[in-house]
Image (cartoon, rainbow, N blue to C red; front, side):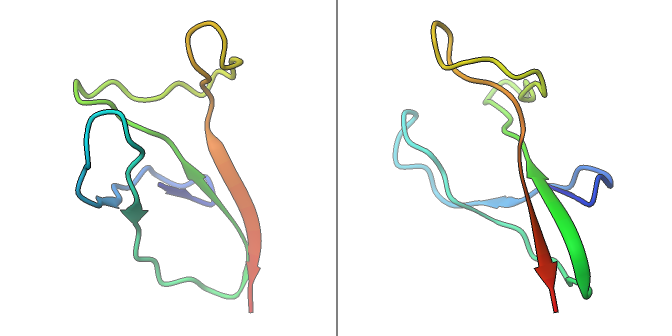
Length: 73
């Protein structure tokens, strides 16, 4: 998890059903008022970090980072 383009921080992962399912995660953060951007990336079981380079799902699966911008009041 990355908050406002700061350093990458680990999120807590929920238990894994099996190797082919998505996992929920939790990131506790003391949000301050204002506009913020959260960015996420995945890390596989070998420690390989998801690339920021965007690629379509076919033929090898999509890549790229996901982010969302929101306001805290």
